[in-house]
Image (cartoon, rainbow, N blue to C red; front, side, top):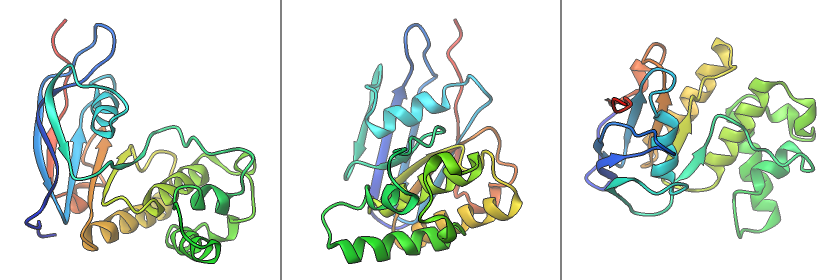
Length: 202
């Protein structure tokens, strides 16, 4: 994947964390057509960095520049239990005619191999299915920048391949993606570059 000229997201020595926990500074530039991996072991602060990039938390230090707010998918699917799968996906699309929203949602669900679940409710889904619905909702939001925490959690190889393809397609369409992963195993082929995330010594 070749990087575009437009910088969509920039982090300059960003330190993230909660309470007394702090990450080591993280810096990168993510351009249109780029896919970046935040890599670190459990407890290293990957989710803290992702929350900070998403604007959910303020950085302790450093600065973040984004052309617009990113779409974000955390490890917990955070689906609305009273909405069907299709309605959960359309929830993130915004102000468009209902028919267009349904068409867009159906396309994202089909891309992720779960279009047959459109009429079900989250309580009827497996963990991996909920994960894919949450990713579909994030991609449907229309954000050029997409952040996904542990995108392959609870997914078998076939489902993981569908998620990878959907994220790569988003990048190919001029977007940019940041994934947080424990290691690059299984994600190396889709990633342009990686940034190590580590906790500051206590």
